[in-house]
Length: 244
Figure 1 (cartoon, rainbow, N blue to C red):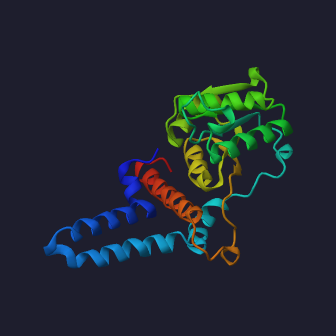
Figure 2: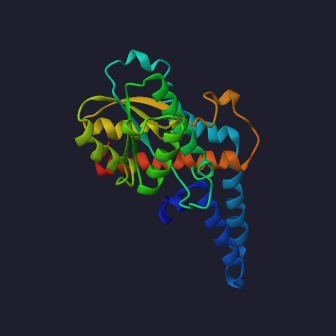
């Protein structure tokens, strides 16, 4: 989950803070003259980062840093598929299909498809306990055998997943399944721990080339910009912490 500081640094969060600041200074007569610049800045941030071109320029270098896994059969020495969790609603009243968000659903589907092509591989779902449990349950229903499905529900971030799985997998190669926008950070962390991940990215959201990007503004593009900025912040933070 995103903490308050991270939220404030995202385009949507920063625009919200500018807007609230504009309302705040407008309420005080002495500072009212600063309201229009702050409100205009909030609108400009939203306009720029909700544009498809901006979102593509930010996200494309992350999403296409590694190619899609076309032929898993060529990696004959791999015996493990690691699936990193995404957000899952912790609400048992919802049907199982509605509990994972879109990113989690794409990751589940990619892992299931990969496992069908490589039935000799085990699957390890790594992440928070609630998310790992739900995503593993869905994989069971998609045909992954229970005796080849394992849960690491003690990892709250990518770095801890790599740390915990190192002792289980060692330096054996593995297929790493996560969203394409998150793959650069995930690959760097696993390699930092001396592991041999083979990327299996999924959950692509925007085109590779900016010339194919939409020039319209939309909440989807703002969400993509938020995701990209979140990942760049994560990369910088992981470098500072020595995880990369």
